[in-house]
Image: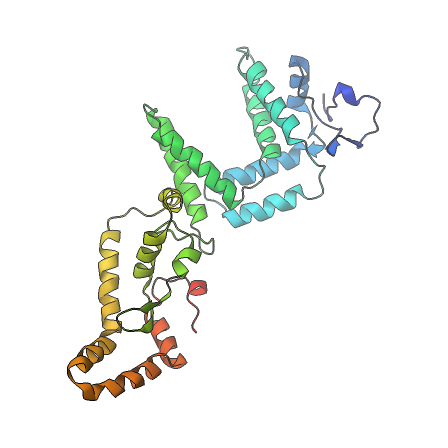
Amino acid sequence: MNGHLRCPSDAGRPEGSTRGRGRHTVGVCANLGAVEFAEALVADELWGWPVTVLDHVQELRQQAWKGEISLEEWREHDTASRAGLPDLDLDEIAQFQNRWIDEWIGNSAPDSDEEGGDRLMRRLAALLEPAPTDEQLWDKLAGVCQELAAPKRERRLVEAYRRRRTRIAEWLTRPGGGIDPVTGLPWAQINRFRVIDEPDLGLPVPQYVELARALAEDSATTEDLQRAEMVRDAADWRRMAVPMGRMQAHYVTLLPRLLRDAADDEPGLRPLLTDLERIWTNPSIQRLLFRETSRGWPVERSPEP
């Protein structure tokens, strides 16, 4: 049957009316049998949503997971495709989906319409899951990592989960997304260490990103680090990043350190320390130091003073 499906309990209600929690009456019941499932396979509307729209948003999902479109493009087009369509009772749709899996797919006959069944599953997923928010991506990633940690997974499933983890990690650490791909920590936490007061010098010193990352990891909570572990870069080069950052920072602060050490032995140099502090904290000098230490910092995270 082409057209939309209605719940028997909606009989006599005007088309397009609402009941309970804003639920649209045009739809498919959660307690349907095999006949109604068969009708759902060929309906051109589900819960008042044209199946052409559902097929389109599902295609967007597949393109995003394949890397053919960006997460931002997926979200933008998904939102535009859903605009103006009826509100949905997601609990009802989820119940229908569960019954569909149990009663149709789980007990399918050899001559059942597998292609149509897969298509209906995709359409139900499109109804239930808009393009995910970042927080939803973190939840999905946690589930994927849990699956990967389970023992005795089939190799095919392990590879599929690894690809899924990689894609989600790429989305969460995308430029402008707020998460550092190297540490897995929010850039906001790392940015707290963009400038630190060096206790030995008593001067504000802009930091190279490698050192700021290390300081952020040292101050992060266990929960922060566990979450970051799911997306951070585990490459071997990181072992050398912090020592290199320390060496670069040593060169930046070499003159102040030499002068301060020498002033301990030569009192005549001590007045120069006051001149040094005035020069070092001059806005022009601070901008120069920011530019010198800007490598690796996202532009929006390293504004000049």
